[in-house]
Length: 473
Image (cartoon, rainbow, N blue to C red; front, side):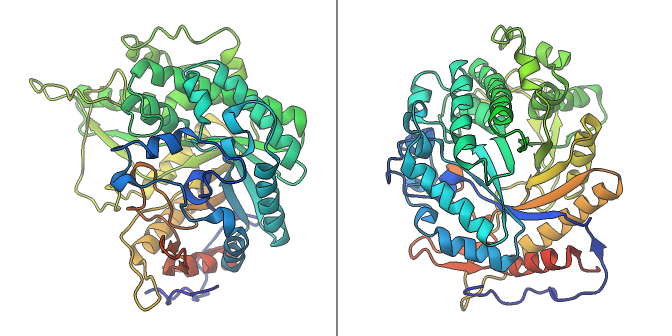
């Protein structure tokens, strides 16, 4: 591993018996195209909604954009070599839709496809299983101009795009994720507007969420038609939602937020229906007239696996009587007045409370929905890192990973069919509306020189992969 980090505070080489994961457990790391690739206008790539959003004044901290990011497009070989030195068994990456299908319609861009062919080939040559995510938020701008995800036609265009990728890469890629975190795409992109495309309409957010799931279902069907042996799933970001007290009002607030954060997606995807209470909660926002006959059957097309992204827990309370509701655009349509409560526990640099037991709870809950294999497709933390004498000793991140992997192991002991874990993120990158001010990576990136420096957490994670488990505490 180039530029090795110093040994962390704990002895990562300790081989005493600890917690062992099941044989064949898939250890990986994850990234997303717009966050790392750069080369925004190279080899035929055209703008996505994130290009437009990041180039709009005031949208991203310090005016940062993904134009260069980690320059992964030009540093593919070196980055895969770092993955191999970590011992990764799998790498979860996303494809840039406007790189392979400029404008979101029509024929594939050969140069864009060639980049992903090279990436997949390099991964396979290094014994790393490619895990391809079709959509990680970079909708081609012309499709947004035509209505974006609130428009039904976008779902059909997503299926066409899926077929292009399946034809080009399906002979070498076994694992496919359709969508990454559709809650963020819908409710941050079209509700609160803090993510691209920056729209602020609750009804649009609900329609976007439905059409994202419809696009998912059509995408699964397209993959099945083109590559019958593919392992196909979807990734949802989930949160335990607790009431701040045992009062009926706080319990109802938790029910409402749980409906929007979790059940809005889990129920249609895995049960083929929307929860009745959620539909009632949203009656002032939409009449659900956008849902057509057959949509829910398409959305619930059978899957091979489910991906879970977990970062934190929500604790909520009922509105404070006599206090006016914040009039700012909200990512919680119909429940804008619910209060989110902080508990005074340790937080990451994102301000997210650290709650490892919440991962166990979340995995158990998804298993209550389905017996499908589950994967933690993202889990990680942002902390303030610095390079000192060529080393990054990120003990807080290392402790975060350790605690959450122990929580994942507890879920396995409870009978949850957890088959793999992907650390977020392989490397520091463009953190969406936060630009380059937040670092999630196990590998430090100097954005001026593009130098990569593995952190202590990277060396520790390599030892976890090597032993297929955790050292004794």
